[in-house]
Amino acid sequence: MWGKVQTVGSITDFMSKGDTLGTAASFSELVDWALHPVDHTKDVGVNIAYEKIEPFLDILGIVSYPVASMLIGIAGLLYILNLREKSISWLTKTSITYVIIQLLPMLTKATLQILAT
Image 1 (cartoon, rainbow, N blue to C red):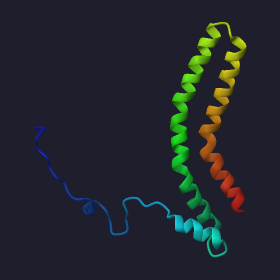
Image 2 (image 1 turned 30 degrees about the vertical axis):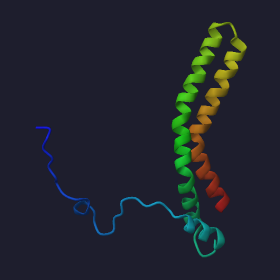
Image 3 (image 1 turned 90 degrees about the horizontal axis):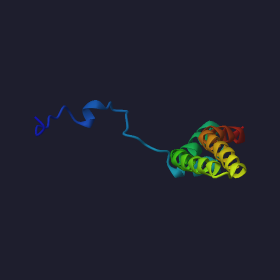
Image 4 (image 1 turned 180 degrees about the vertical axis):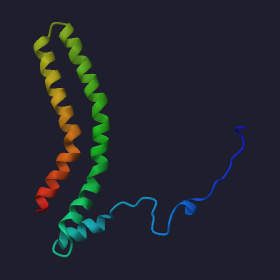
């Protein structure tokens, strides 16, 4: 039952002629847009720039959750140990920072679009 491998087709069977497996914008396109902004639309440049930054923003967003959870847990322990003022400060700063990091992709995209106009 588990030893059998059944092949249902190759990748080319499932892809049409125009499809690609996943291509990222090349760095040369970004440089070309930066050097010749009149020749290319501003939206293309914004999208290329954002595609270069997006993986780092995704990693930052994923890493922020466990870090924020640890800091909130430590702040809870500080509250139990009667360091209430420091605890509330940590909770507030951690919560605000976490929300800003989660909104960072949207804010970055909006900033790039504003700079392109």
